[in-house]
Image 1 (cartoon, rainbow, N blue to C red):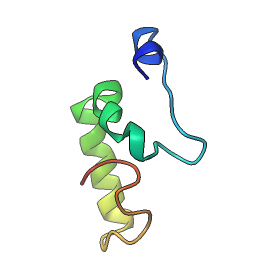
Image 2: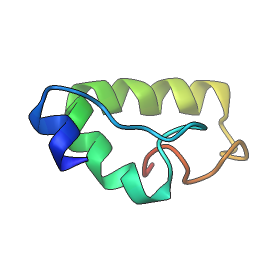
Image 3: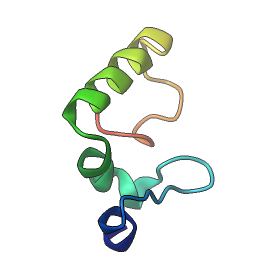
Length: 58
């Protein structure tokens, strides 16, 4: 992750961010992007039943 981010790249899992990479998403995407992602997630999944805790911390 550190190498990918240092080269202005990204490193995600095949099926999403993955539990080990959640902490890096904030560093990679930034606060504004994560806020937007969270708002979309809440709008589409208000009960948090779809892949809870797999993309980012709510």
